[in-house]
Length: 167
Ligand SMILES: [Zn+2]
Ligand SMILES: [Zn+2]
Image 1 (cartoon, rainbow, N blue to C red):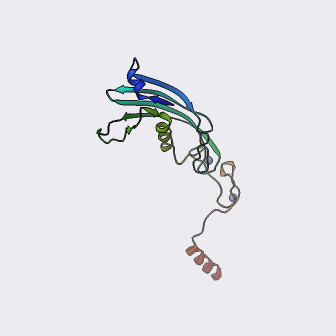
Image 2 (cartoon, helix red, strand yellow):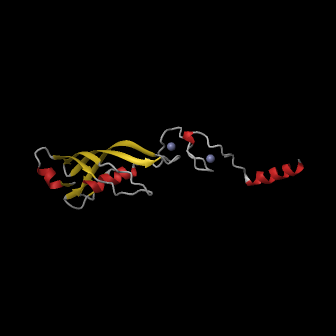
Image 3 (tube, helix red, strand yellow):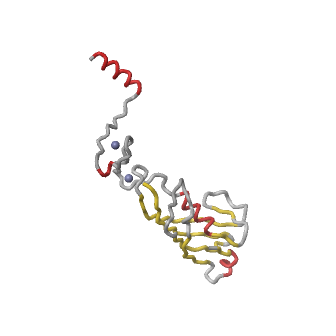
């Protein structure tokens, strides 16, 4: 959604509220499409004597795969964003200041990157997920597959062979 900063200044309450959905279903991250469901953003842009305070809440349902067993996981992510928008370059360099060049500010361009940067890189279906068997790919949450998964160090393997020969 585009907010006109001039409109914020001339509005009666010196602020414009917003509440809308963004369709991010085409965004792909590492081969996944995390935003099957629409992402909701709401908040306000308020005139603060030349600069503008952007306060927003982002609500997303994230669909991803468990990092261990690859099962589909859906979780709700709610985050608050608090930023200052300004057209003045002489402001102090700060993390939460965004320079805007035009009067019309596309909120999606500011809020979507905030969401993407804040996604958890590793998500588990449950804290004690047992993952997949490295040998046969069986989901170990569903029980043992019977594989011997004790990896033998190649240097130890040589020793093991020597011991076998002695027997
Ligand atoms: Zn899992
Ligand atoms: Zn196995």
